[in-house]
Length: 263
Length: 376
Image (cartoon, rainbow over the protein chains, first blue to last red):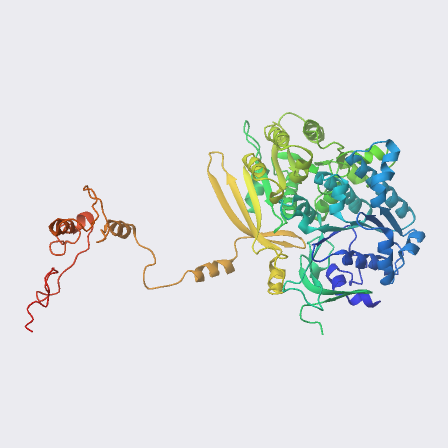
């Protein structure tokens, strides 16, 4: 296998199990980050993971609320993965919500309600998933970057966001998709944060990204906590296990290591 | 006491009484409410199948899991789901709760659910309408298993939290209480995530239920501590917790019982509070040779003691010496407080400090100069 196989993060999610090459099928993975430490690198890592496996039945639907295609393409190219080529292959479906949300929707029916925007988006996802399944792409991953901006697109209605996510969740059980979502924890600090709590209930795997507890360090960029909920079909050693480790982000990848073990 | 819960739900309602109702609530630190819910669901289902329970069938409102998931779950526990008896009916509020799919996929076959599941489940595309929900529950129950007269069925709701997203608490309370009071409902139970709602919502739900089961974590949340210290401890304990049950009897008596639970691969397991903890509790109480606490009599006696320099206010107006009165007046004031010579007579009445002189050699306190006989 490639270099990524020995990665701590992959091990914590369950990618290192040879009997089950796609452990995320039917599961929702939530990445929670904060202002001090961005969790976007986890998305990039998982994105690369989806395309780097020799298994060509993987496909990704990407809902980009925060960055443009060019941004992701540049980063993934550094990691050794060509998104533009994957898009041409039909394995990468990119919804640029920065432009789509504002102009594309309104032209169709004149004026669109907040709900209408998300219903339309869900409909597009459902169609894309159906098309990918038709093309024998068995494992479709839906990536949402990020939930807070999805809430902005829903005009601040967290109920609408949850409804949208619920509909995406139905795809998990119906066609065996998986969902990877990024959420900013500290956006909801002051209010009793019902949205992010709801998301934590919904998630099967929770990855928290935060700054180093002991303060800023030169060779450690932050730390990760991975929690696997006890769902069936999961490796025994991962069931409801909490794993903590630290990371260091480089241009062409991320290093993961246990605290104190970095040379 | 997970068994006693299941027994109460199994035995159902008496004629003319409300159906027994169970609220299962959990929070994010111990999010295993669904495990407890499915435990109750399977126990009740096997009772129904064995004909031991008052109810002959079960209507399940699935909000958080798909009907196919439940069919799988019940099959895995060895329950006969596909039989022609049709003892379970699932009102599918999961697949398309708001009718979005219906709106866009007109005519298209959206789901690839197998025949067995679709026989049991009935799609609901507007979960916000409580009246419609109620009538479809009753219709499903009556058509499914209630043949003649007195046969009853159970109602289970797998997530009141999701219901509350689509309706107000008053509308929901209306639905739940009309379910409880319906003649053909034997018992109901539902799951709610405690920390997602305001206290009044949880209180409203608890008022409507005869049994409340709470799942609590034994340890603080694992991901709040941002260090590696004690990591192994958290890993070991995180599937365990405490299960508190509050049962309200018909006569108003309330009983509270606690149990430990552990979520295992095969499901949730309940055990009586472990002996390990009992041992810890015993050890924590220190063994000492003196009493740490006073008896009631001792407390009363202590309260009666008049402290010498405390103004007691015993009937007389309190006078504070201001330095301008004559000395004799202030002497009189001192007498009841400093009763050093005759105090042992009336000591029990009001509690005083008793002072015995050690010997006659010791002179009583006076203002005399003790050195005035010195011949210098």
